[in-house]
Length: 408
Length: 115
Image 1 (tube, one colour):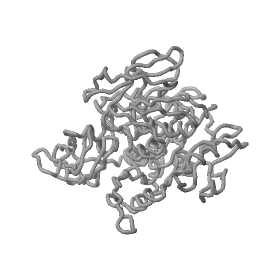
Image 2 (cartoon, chains in turn yellow, brown):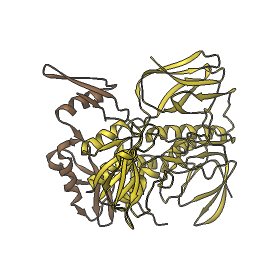
Image 3 (cartoon, helix red, strand yellow):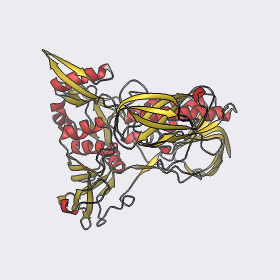
Image 4 (cartoon, chains in turn red, brown):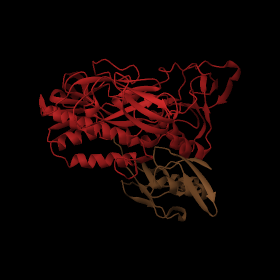
């Protein structure tokens, strides 16, 4: 058994930022990571565009990870356990398994930063045969960028998530023919900049309100039957066409890795619910990063991880004092909001949320129980693919709150 | 011309119009957007990120600055034909690629999965 002030599960961008802040705050901290290295998924994201918000400079994924790893290596009070699996969580303690056998780590506070997993062909009930050649986008990304292997030659990408768009460009540059990116929704789920620089730049067609009806092939993918869907995702059989391809790549969403936790989950984020200190319903257990909700930018993951690390270390010191608790509920076009509950008191809260449909020239408004506006923020235009952030001063919180969009 | 700014993930919707000899950018939230808008209609540029083959496996590389968009595929072909013994983060593998003024630099190290 080993004792720590703060235990962080996960050595990706969220966990690294949390552990850094916690140890800088004087707490004896440990990162438990199942891979043999820190950095998480950043190691396979070799494209640029990371760090503009956090560092004010643009990096590729491996460079961004290295910045954090170098800071971590210089930090005292911080232990790194790689090649180590957490098999059980018990309050703020965890059971681990590694080459050294099984052990228990006892913490005063725990940070959950386990990230998420990709949805698979099974998750989306992909119809047809089950040949080789169907990959998730992250799996294909690891194959290409780390192992140096190509998943196929003629590729169809289903789903327009950012990893799918990035892989469309990556596979094109590695010599494959990306025949189409198909998105079941009327808008893409990826960032606008990725549509421009990954698809438009390389003349890769984006087909909206389109889906794969059937996978064809025996042994290996030989093609697909695809076509249009209506606003309720019903297939329009008269639009069915056939397309030859040897590989299907799925970029159809991410699901937080919650297997280890025994907490009620939010219906939309499919993860735990937290208060404005990023603390879950279990005292001393904090959550952050893509484990808590799927982010668009790693910079936001790092910021949230850092906040969780500070709060967890304050909790471990017995210094986290909280005011009265109230609920924060999303309304209308807002699909979810983090945090789920807020406290009155001092300081400022970062509120992160997503919208279901594109909005233009509107105000984000927070209302109290009697319908009074306690704060508003103007938004010129926003898309479902982009995470939204607003700030709220705690001294304004005096009742249960609702977050809504008011069109101007 | 209507453009989506790609300088950062915010993705401002830009409108670039020609007023006399000057291009004027609106819809941007920062100076980078103005620069991008003018450059995109006159001489579009991109940073290229790809892989370089080494005897010990692949390594990620990038151009140290954006290069003209029409030279991306040629630069990519040039890099993909290379096969170097080994490399580490920060090594320059091509100087002044295709006369663009940008170097090609390794951005990461070998990812080893052995226990």
